[in-house]
Amino acid sequence: MIEQFSLPGLLADLILVLHVAVVAFVVLGQFAFLLGWHLGWAWVRWYWLRLTHLCTIIFVVVQTWLGQLCPLTIWEQQLRAAAGQDAYSESFIEHWFSRLLYYDAPWWVFVSAYTAFGALVVLTWWRLPPRRQTAR
Image 1 (tube, one colour):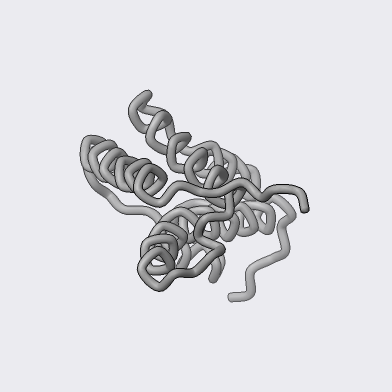
Image 2 (image 1 turned 30 degrees about the vertical axis):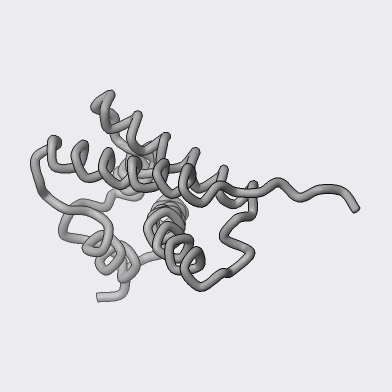
């Protein structure tokens, strides 16, 4: 059956793609910083990139400690409801990216994992401090 076009459904898919991109930035960015540190890559010390990365994971850790869902998750769910979508009628993007992004586990698992990962980011910030660009 062909799914009918729905603006809220399309927006929900776009938010899901953005959500996956944010998660990839945080997780893959951290591994790239660590790898780049060992390989001597200069860009791993870019101040604004590292500050954005640090602020993003701090936001995630704080919201989980407060028992809050990610705003992107909330907006996506609201748009899916507005599109009349339920758990059985999902788009291709929702189907695959949701399986990549969402897990069914107790809340304490997420709090622990996000806190540990946030601590790794802070430790990396301390051990591999970013450098501000100076005017030439």
